[in-house]
Length: 57
Length: 424
Image 1 (cartoon, rainbow over the protein chains, first blue to last red):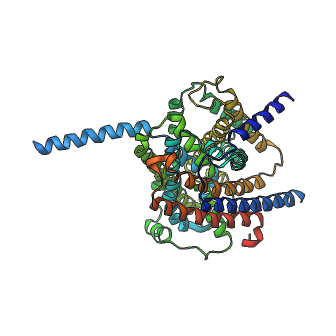
Image 2: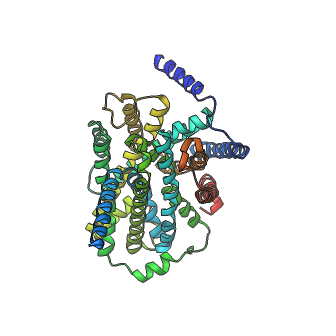
Image 3: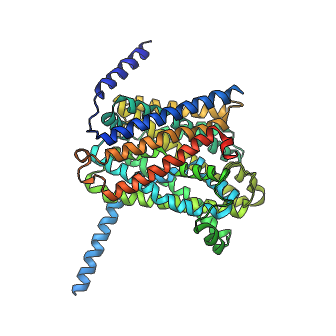
């Protein structure tokens, strides 16, 4: 339990440390990052669907 | 007299540059040779067996492509003194940071599983049981860190990398038809058109040549080695030499596979190829098995480091190869755990290794476009990389590569998930 709590604290600390992106993002870069996020979420969704289907057999 | 002194000056300058190159050489050669890991060896063997010499031009083209991607990591590592994972966290925030780190760790664990599959298959050719192979390999990898010196580690791994070239001399002994190689292999074309399994194998070849772990590995390696701004030209040569090694080995494998298995679409893996060749051509079979084991070993050595370095950077653990085992205990413990998990998966009776091999490629594909986009964005930040900011030409080249990889990797991922789409 101590290790788990320690890990959670550490992850929170990391999230706080890197909360603000340290580079200036142009509008173009922001659009690319949003598109990338949608692309990845779709791909991960398809992947999970496939994994569940395959292991279900 | 004037000519003599000028020649002597150039000779001295060349010698000095060679000495510096010898000191800098390492990260580029290791990452590129590790690119021809157990999965890579199988991919090249299968492409030769299924489509003969037709894939040679693709491999020749992928060498420079891999160089363009990896060279960017050198500049970023030297200028920021940070690994790729930490650079992503700092530049893009926790969402992209955790996404990259989780995906990298998952991919690397599964990739190491495929390395163990390759190594155990290779050693089974000599009658060595898988459990014994795994214990010896994991012990060896961890013992390499006992010394606590990056330089020692690097030189030993470079020696292991040299064994990866074992396939090249074989080509000269088996006397392939050179004019046929040029006719079928060097002139671009697609066997049986661009449909069905050809697309799948092309994508697998791309996937094995440019992998996300390579970006993380080389950047962290450059940082751990302590390369400086003045070393960048030599580090570029290091990457270019490594890229040439990769291409030469891959072409040699395609030629060997064509000569012995050309047209045999029943071949399933490099391990199977080695076992099949043992009774007929024991020397070639032995070399194939040794090469496959070596490829798996280099892969396990490098891939396990890529994720351990990344996790170590982000969690703030001591994560240098210059640290002794005890000093960097979390880093080493993480690396050991990843290898034990990967090794255990291979030993589970009836484990779905086919699904593992398939999913490792797909998960890698999900990370690759993101990792490459981050690389380009970071290399356009002048306050971050200064004079080593991407030029317009570098951006066009890298952007084109990302575009093509994005399109092909999407096809590959979707094709892996829904095989019937490509008639698989």
